[in-house]
Amino acid sequence: MKPEFIKPIPKYLLEMIKKLDFERYPNQKGHCRFYSYLTKIKGELVKVTVAAKSRGKKWYHKQVAVHGTKSEHCLVKDMKFHSMGGYSVGWWAEGMYREPYWYEDGEWGDADFKHLNPPSLLLNKEFVCKFPQYKYSAHQLFRGDCIIKYLRLYEKYPQTEYLIKFGLPGLHDKTTILKLIAKDKSFCKWLIKHQNEITYLTYAGVIIESYKTGKPMKVIQEFAERKKRFERESDMQPIRGLFRKDPERFFSYIDGQKRNPRSYLDYLNACNFLGLDMTIPKNRYPRDFKKWHDIRIDQYHTAKAKADKKQRAELYQQFAAVAKKYLTLQNCKQGVYAVFIARSPAELVREGARLDHCVGRMDYEQKMVREETLIFFIRSIERPDVPFVTVEYSLTSKKVLQCYGQESKRPDEPVMDFVNKVWLPYANRTIKKLTQAA
Image 1: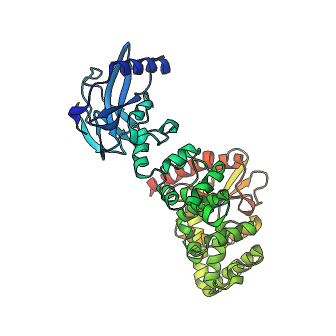
Image 2: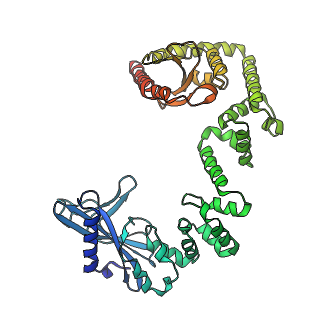
Image 3: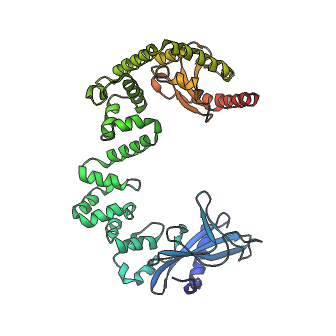
């Protein structure tokens, strides 16, 4: 496919584009619009994309891209794509601007096929019928962005026809599905039987696993999404290492115990510190997790304290020094809430015990001494001595890392609004002043 073979837009198609553009955008304002039509270039079926734009009473148009069924590259003119801003077209040659943009030279250039292919309204899909090789492609039923991309895939995997005809267009470009259909006729029948369960968001791997195992797709999909989120959390590496062969059982276990991965992480860290063998089922899957979680955390805390009393005394002194250094961050008295900085590890223990979370049990005192994070207590003005909500604040990112109430539950919206919209801005301003003063 060469630029010299590209012909001007046929007059009847140009009139059709102009008419449609004024019907769809009567006020003729907004960004550039895209339309496309099919034609033949040297025996190859191609799609020509046309850009349209208006300024005042003038209507502008130009060919900006050509994609073919046989060509590995497409041809592009005066157009660019940015992940944030989308597609842009230069109109200097048409007299809209005084100077050309950097990407605008009026010449056709090669580009990767998958890039610079803006979604467009196709005007003459019936043109496909002029090509006998696409007679059984079910192109009439295709509703995607690019008919050329679909036909290219059809030539390689004719099984796409079945997916389109049986109402599964979201799978037509999933090569793993197409390859399995080609090898296993039973899979094709299974897909048709379960087509109502499949959506555009269903992973191809989920479909194949459901076919092979008989498990419901919804269950597999939810687990896949949950596992993906879990794997993105860097601090969950100890759990991933322990359950790398059977992560599904881990999630089933904590769900049955009505706990979350972070509670198990605290438990696992305590067990590792105590030297327990986590390959033993009773350690890995305690029958009453809450009971043994609390026992192991207390044992961990005691063992750690006994390890070096002198170090503990130094820890208390260092902790108090850090609390004093950042004492001004708590002087935010607005509304019905008050903020207090933790003054000692003992206060963390008391807070964690009263609210049934691990702020006083798992290394938060060390993080505070190292000035990585600070722990604050959110209290009601009317009951300043009663533990209510605990906040972990990062001195590095200047963000709230955690904000939990009773049993690690998310606080109500009024509390979250106070923390994020009132206290956090105040804390960040105060930190800035402390930094400048230093």
